[in-house]
Length: 236
Ligand code: DGP
Image (cartoon, rainbow, N blue to C red):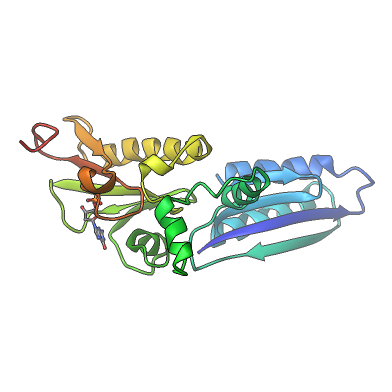
């Protein structure tokens, strides 16, 4: 289970400046590979529950080792199971409202759904449910931004799908603000191509958009295909 926390570690009995202790904690979070954002009264951290709390424990251990006899930590903890949401998603959502723009995931169909009183969230989306684990999949990779799993109906010896955890109807709905997600998709695709053994001979990475594109599932996804010569790009 993923968690977002707001951590404020306050060493007691070490004088008025705590910055060296905060720096030590930031280093621990870096080493743990956790996404984190320091602010004036603490640090937001996101990641897998056990990894986050192991890092919090390590912060206490190290700050004690540095000479603090007491530590008083405050911690806000948030989880959600209705959909995947990162810290950046929360910020983007507020920023888009400040700019007077609809959230980036709002496709015209989404607005239409709203007008018809349909549930706006992606509850009906198969891939959102795969991301949260509500629908089982043969999952190969997941982090706070993307999930990769095997296609249920493989068209090649290796046929994986890589999806953003957050719902976008299709790739055309994604923009500049999703640069981090797109970068991660590229990175994970390269890693999985190596892991699946298709990197040496080559592979294909495609996304279908809309009806003419042959898109069946309305949640941005990339097909990673390989393991045999894939022929021309388009069926003739
Ligand atoms: P596209 O046609 O580009 O929208 O591709 C959708 C792909 O998603 C298609 O190759 C089959 C796959 N797919 C559909 N439903 C599921 C599912 O429940 N689990 C998995 N693993 N793949 C699915």
